[in-house]
Figure (cartoon, chains in turn yellow, blue):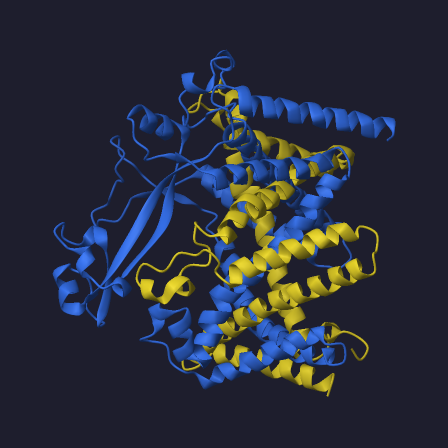
Length: 235
Length: 375
């Protein structure tokens, strides 16, 4: 019950999807299942939210270290959730003003939900991602050493592409005539060649590898060889 | 308070004092937002009246913006229930505010809520960037807020964009369209099959129940099974075959010939005249060799020795170039994001630069920066 049904369910659903692809009558099943898929993904967000609350509330009640930060997380979560689900402060839909705020857009620019999105979520997300610039640079500085030819290739390519895609790189080799015999030595031209030929070749091989890997893993799951997704134990 | 903490407190206090000074005593301040309030009024009209206003007349009552009605239309004559108004706004920049002030109008006004928003966004940005020095309470506050807000944001998006239109509207079209989705009330139909994703959704939420958590395996299995079936075909069709197809290129490459005026030269049949291109052929050859060499490297059924080893080594070189390019693009992407944050701090918040000319140069005291090329 706990292990057999999930295995059967995964196999049947997966093979139906494969077979459906080859018939014009059932080809649209893929689109329908994609909608179900999106519904379950949205419900997974609810599950994630519930889990977040559970963990942080436990942390607060146990007074674990840093519990005050959990309070901030829970309050931020509940405020944002309430404002968004209740469509608080949302203007009516211009086509249906008599339906009140419920028919309006939840992310209406006059709503507090939008305000929180615009002035807290967006800057926080962008800055956290932007910080990776420092860490990538720092990690590269520490890890990248031209110890051998392969490492030298990686470094040189990164250097050329970084320069070739910026105004500084174009400026550096601007003295080479664009229509002369050495035009290929201009940084932007070198970048173009690297991207179009060498990078394309590598990426194609990687894509072929990923496709074959995905197909083999999918088959292992559908045939019940790989059961790791069910987890272990009884819970 | 130890010496290091004291130093940081002093630095923060000096920074706060400088900010407060600039905000309060600088001629035009900083980090302010302006808006133009806009009142929207809609009038519910009978279909025949609405037709006169060139609106769609499919329903009994049609809501028409007051701006689309004739000037002599008497709104006061319409019943109160048939007139709906609300306030919205348009964001404006400082230059527009000054222009409105000079014109003696109140079209553009200071917005307290947006100004507070800019300040909070700037402070949160600084809180996050403070992690570069070391982990600290300000960063943890920002991080905790981000976790809560982002989890709730994606829940709300999932609920209104996916669950309501794709699940509620299919299982309960009447109540759902009467409640939140009047736009689809004509085409929304009951679809019994959607009871399946509803059951799976409930089972998935059972994960939160300690004793019934195992039930969440069923929707997960369905989720993974359909994904595997769907992606198995799409990857083989869209990636595997497509990449191979695109790699089968002519090693005797030809290119269209162009006349002096830039137009393609055509033969008697009207087809473009093609001519052999040496470098094009070399490029295609490198591409084919590169893909094959990389694939040999990925092939581990043979020991990488001799010819196989040499080819695999060539594949590694191609892959190193690919990884180098990917690294460069990743760095560029992150630097671009950082530049946007820095621009936000210096432009929107501190008003120290004005790259898009949103504020009059002489009005915001940027003459000092002009010789540095920042104004």
